[in-house]
Length: 169
Image (cartoon, rainbow, N blue to C red; front, side):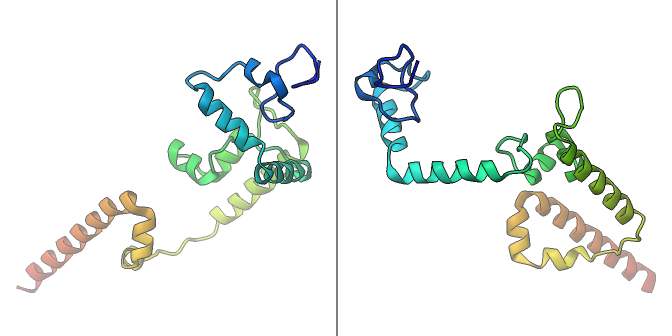
């Protein structure tokens, strides 16, 4: 019942090594030819990949809470689904029944909710958007999102200047 080259009845595991003669017995993933499959296996067998894999395995052992959000970052998930970070945290830490997967996570969530509510009760300060718009690095990083907003701000400023001129005359 082992993987690869040990005479067991299971096909070799692609990440486990020890492929021997059974490498060709592996069921190939769809849309992948044998040449590409062999190149993939060769990459998995490199020392660099094995070190990285071992390091990742050790890191996962140290994690207190398992990541349930997939490969998507919090910021990306917030933007794509138009959610705030607290909502994304909740969605990625509950099961299908809406129950938290870990009591520690529920405590963290409750603390974040309390912090969020305390910050919401504090008055906010207005920020001059033009300060950000003059920073080319900010505009480059935000890109397509900020450009229409920049045009809108410029139009509003032009309207204010035009109305100011009318009042003087």
